Image 1 (cartoon, one colour):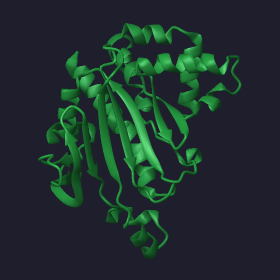
Image 2 (image 1 turned 30 degrees about the horizontal axis):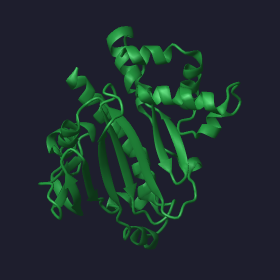
Image 3 (image 1 turned 180 degrees about the horizontal axis):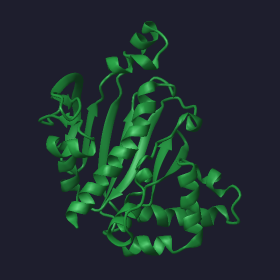
Length: 260
């Protein structure tokens, strides 16, 4: 927590956070625009903010986007300052204006969590705990390669087989499984049944790579890669780009609060 206070004590770093709060998901070039700082200085400030968990990054093709992560600020608020408005929870991933042309579209998101690789892997594979950071939804499996991944459809729903399967499962290191196709609830996103049925043939996959961070204070670096999309206009890509940021931010908050 002391590191977060020190990071926030710098005016330039607070200005960068303000810019991300005004428009989340900016590249280094965009963040440098209009600032009386060199590109190198902005990059160093962003590295400090990322190290303490105030900024998270995601790669889309060749571009690296920066996102405000409010979890450390909310922790400070809860412990030291009092109740702030929780609108910071309404973070979003890259919106349509951040779409970039790429041959193989994917969503990549990195986050540091103060925990161990073993505990993080357990959190990713524990069905009951997963419901807490998925918001009542969540996967369940025996996590053997080839086994089905069942999906709980809401807090009161039952686990269903949506055609997902485990691709790779290495405790403490990596977990990967196929993602479900578009569901009937997504029909409203399309102009016609024909467009919807065509989009339903797409099946993506998600992978969680776990490595120890360079610094003990940072714990573990979790890299999520969700790929296999057919185009940058994929409705599933849009949905997971918004959803994963919130889900992993909640996971980070739960794990770090319970460890403290």
